[in-house]
Amino acid sequence: MISTFQAQILEKRQLTEHVYLLRFKAVDLDYTFLPGQYTIFHMPQGDGHAARRLYSMASPASQKDAFELIVEILPNGIASAHFMNMQIGETVTAQGPAGMFTLNPDPADSVFLATGTGIAPIRSMIYHLIENRSNNKIYLFWGASNMKDTYLFDEFKQLAESSPNFMFLNCISREQDLSCVINTLDHKYYAIGRVNDAGIEKVEAIANNLNAHHYYICGGTKMVEGMKEYLTGKAIPKEHIHLEKFTV
Image (tube, rainbow, N blue to C red; front, side):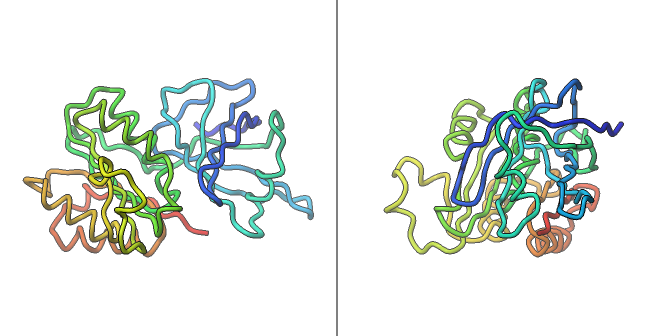
């Protein structure tokens, strides 16, 4: 059921030059959602009409006291400007939860493929699987253009070290050499290339049966459509491919 409520901002944490983690609580509402769902924010405009903007929850669904977003701040963006101008403790009208990009109940290995802030709903999904002690493998392949565009590395590294069924790879598409910018011990968490080639190459190297996995893809339209076409070409059943496109 979709509820309308006031979302109070609790924290702004800068992750990169243009990406922030925003933490909200729903005022006077026990806000529960499924991993992968989103919240609709009503952003005030000068003409008095609110613009609707959709943001996926990035936090674990088990976190009941607040929810988190991962937001890219865009030049001249209505939502970007409003979020950046909000003071801690202020509220904005919101609705939710909504969305059908959720985990399939089938007990199978999960492959997550994301670019940019497409990591938001996938972060929520991964925490849910780990918290529920899934015995299935969880693979994350997350693409960025440059090292400066990466974030949450320490968080995912800690998850990989504490959860033997989880592994992740940052796919960096526009760097020539990563050896001078990352610790030698962390090389195993990086690859040079796009997520739709470096990531899938890794999947094929470690997976015994590509058809047995469920694939969750989130990012820009071009990347999502490219991954869908690739997986379909590999004869992956369409019911094993789950998509969420982020558009700006």
